[in-house]
Length: 408
Image (cartoon, rainbow, N blue to C red; front, top):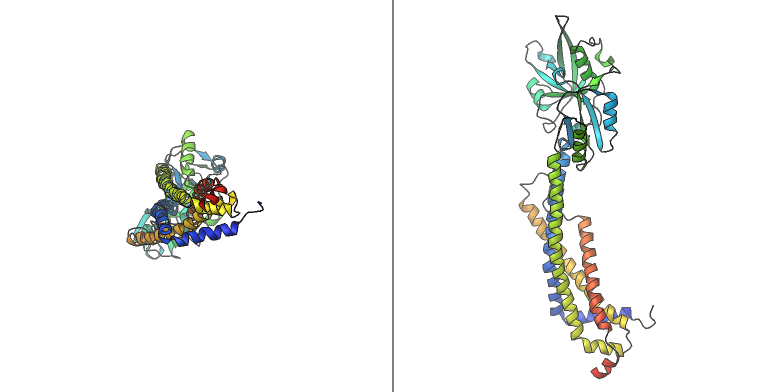
C-alpha cells in the first residue's frame, strides 16, 4: 500500500463535500431514483408475472401430463425403458379404453338400479394428480372417486360401492359383483370426469376378465398381474415444465401418438425469453442514462473542485487519494439513491398488488421483488458507480501538486 495513502481522510472529505452542497447532492440522488425506481418496478412486474404464470402451471399437474391417445402394445419392458428417461417424474401404464370401466352403485341403494359406468384410471403412490391426498390405496379393493361420480352416487369418504362387471364368455353372459371401498372423494380440481383411481392390479383384473383371459379371483386383493401382460398405453408426468416439450418431441419421434400441453409450455418459455430481452433493453437504456447522469455530475464536480483538489495534492495527498475521492462520493450517492428507489418501488409494488388482488388467483402477486432481483440491482448499481467514479477519479489523479501553488 502507498505510504502516503489517506483513505479515511479522503472518505471524510468526500462526505463533508456532499454535506456542504446539500441541494446539489439531493439532485444527484433524485436523478438516480428517477432512473432506478421505475427499473425496479418493471423488473418486479416481470418477475411477478412470470412467477405467477409458472406457479399456475406448476400447481396444475395436467400441464406436465403426457398421455397416449391410441391403443398399441407396450410390454412392461417398454414402460421401464420409457421411464428410464431422467426427465420423467412418474409413469403409469393404462389398460384398453373399452375395458377400463365398471358399473358402480351406492352399496346402500344398490337395489334401485341408480348406478353409473365409471372409468378406471390406474394409479400408484407418487401420482402427481393425487399429490395432495394424504391417504392412499393400500389394497386392490380401495379406490379414489372423482367429485362428479361421488356426487351422482351420493358417496362420501369411507363409503362402499357395489361394482358390477359383465362379460360374454362362450356365448354366455357372466356377471360378478364385488364391493369397493372409497378411500377418498377427490376435489373437483383433479378431474371433471366420472372416474375412479384404482390400483393397476384391479384395472388389469377387469381387463383380463372381460377379454376372457382370466377368471375373476375369489378375493380381488389376491389378484396378481400376469408377467406377460401387455398395456395399451400410459400416462406420464415430466419433472419440470421445461422437460415437457422435449419429452413430447422424443415420444413423437418414436411414433407414439400422444397428447400434451407442450405448446402451452413452449409459449410460456418463449414469453419468458422475450420478456427477458425486453427488460434487458429497457434496463440498458435506463442504466445508460443513470451512468451518464451520475458520471457527468462527478466529472463536472471534479472540474469545479479542480483548485481544491490541487491544494490537497500540494498538502500531501497522492494521486490514489484523489481517485478515491469521487469513488467515495459515488458510493454514498448510489447507496442513498438505492435506498430511496427500493422504498419507492416496494411502495408502488404493494399498491399494484392491492389493486389487482381481486383479479389474481389466491397467493399470486403481480409485483414480486425477490432476493435475486435485489442482489442484482445492488451489484449493478455499485458496479456502475465504481466504473463511473474511477473514470472521474482518473481525471482527478492527473492534477499535479504544483497546481496547488498556483491556486494559492
